[in-house]
Amino acid sequence: MTIDTKSPADPVDHTAQREQAAGPSRSERLSALAQQHGALVTLIVAVVAASVGFDTFMTADNMENMAVSSAFLAVVALGMTFVIVTGGIDLSVGSLFALGGVLAAWGSQYGTAVALLLPLAVCGLIGLVNGLLIARARLAPFIVTLAAMLAARGILLSVTDEGSKTYLVDKDSFFATLGQGKVLGVGAPVWITVALFVAGAVVLRRTRFGQYVYAVGGNEDAAALMGAPVARTKIAVYTVSGLCAGLAGALNAAWLVSGVTILGSGMELEAISAVVIGGTLLTGGFGFISGSLVGVLLLKVIQNVINQIGSLDSAYQQVVSGAFLAVVVIAQTWLGRRRRVL
Image 1 (cartoon, helix red, strand yellow):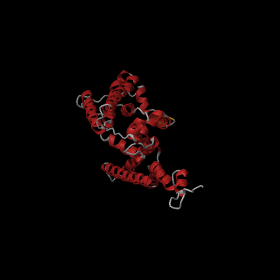
Image 2: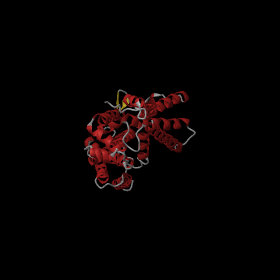
Image 3: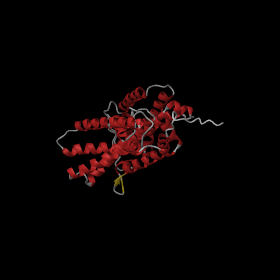
Image 4: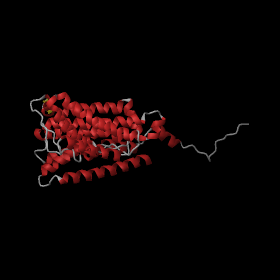
């Protein structure tokens, strides 16, 4: 005799099974799109509004100035993106940016190779030390990179005799051309930045190392169980961040044809803001290289609009940027909770 073990008391939720098999719901997809492309939509709206409100906004000179000035922050934000996706933070990039510029200007007297390799070597080494202390000694990224920020400023002051020396770059050198030259009417630093972002996007999204970066940021313990080299990944991203900051400083020195000692103050906060505005979560495990570039451009558009107004001083740039960042973080938190609930 066959007994039917199924009964009305044990119903099968076919609807839930179908929804699970169908993948993310429409609400989840919309939340993900808003989190990924919200900054781009905001940038487009801001550009259109600024173009309508100010006649000088869309001029060739203004666009070029914004593009070139954005390039240096964008390179710093590129390295910061890798760090934040792993769930870390790097407060030393502003000081490394300034140090890289001074070292590049000093090294330019010995040729372009020295002007580029010296800041990369020094800033990359500081980034490597940051990574080793964070990954191997298990120290907090905030404390380690804060100490590196102070150390880099100390080295900067030592090299420039307490800031009294300003090293100049020969305007006729090839190194100066990297900062002031143009290709197809666009500044060379912009092309260099675009190339770096394309390479960074490929590394983060299409390589095994990029998978490790996401895995470490998503769940470090789970990543270790899956065989991901957690420590080496952390060391690598902080080294990349140091290299990017040093390179950005060198390009800025080539653009200004001098190593200005007072630059870089607060740049670490700008870079973090740009990365977060671009959709990368501060908690790690989720982010986009392209989003960081959009975040940089959005910050620069906001700053440019404030300058176009004329009646507002530069302090309002910080107020508006801070308020905008707070709104973005709140929106990201809400979208993240909504996706988990759905």
